[in-house]
Length: 356
Image (cartoon, rainbow, N blue to C red; front, side):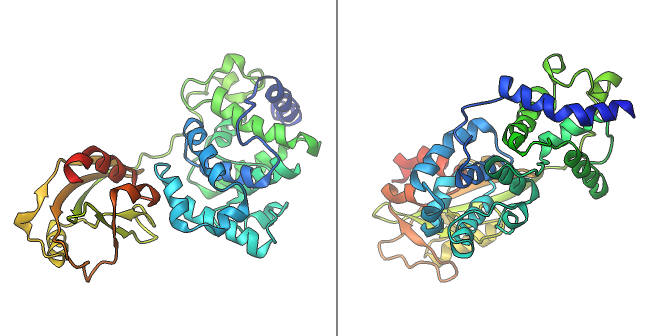
């Protein structure tokens, strides 16, 4: 019991001091401006910092404030997001910007509860914005923080269990610093400690500011905590692309449904059935024997491995757009302004000489 009391009293002061001396500084989104903090928090969800460092400045240059983002076309937002994955984040980002403009007068709310009203903003993301920008005494609880807490207090539980997650929230709230002015450093410290020291594999306990009070370290249980999530089987999914170009070299693209793979992006017509693909081709006046089969493309999603097989063909000069599928003929030089899936972008670049 005494060890837990020491943890609760010393954790925040130690973390704040450590972050100010050894934490990450100079990241592009380390600011008090809510728009930029919110943007970075959404981008960093399930995405490495190194990747976001590439996308973030381009996004801010195009949409420097929430008003510019709210006024943009969804396709422009998705186009800049291309390659970041989890495209629902981009659609929610766009909707949330419009909420800020229309419901909050263009000013981000300062309270966590109000921030949670924004599309795509959960409790932890809202807490991060409130803490960084408004010194709110709100705790975050992302994957890194869960790992830190499980090791600090030697908490062993199922990460998918709601009761265990509630316990982690309660634990995190009990550790908050008393001084609200310390919240930005404290919150960044939580992120930094989990990302650079208390790593999932090979934690660097020797330089951890908590190594003398961390229960998992003292008990020799660092490697077993937190308990691993049950592995999710990766399913192979066959996907057939119908890559059509007309005599002018334009490629036919259609907008994907909002839900599902590549939701909201522009893509060539595709099907999980070869028979369905042949039927789509016939709508363009193309028979199965006129299609050229390409080389299979493998593309990994979180729980699915896409096995993509492209079929190409040249449509006639006056080929009608399929009655079953709405879309547009897009000239090669205009592809960059359409948000298209990363594997399609790579494929079109690779075959552009033969295709165009």
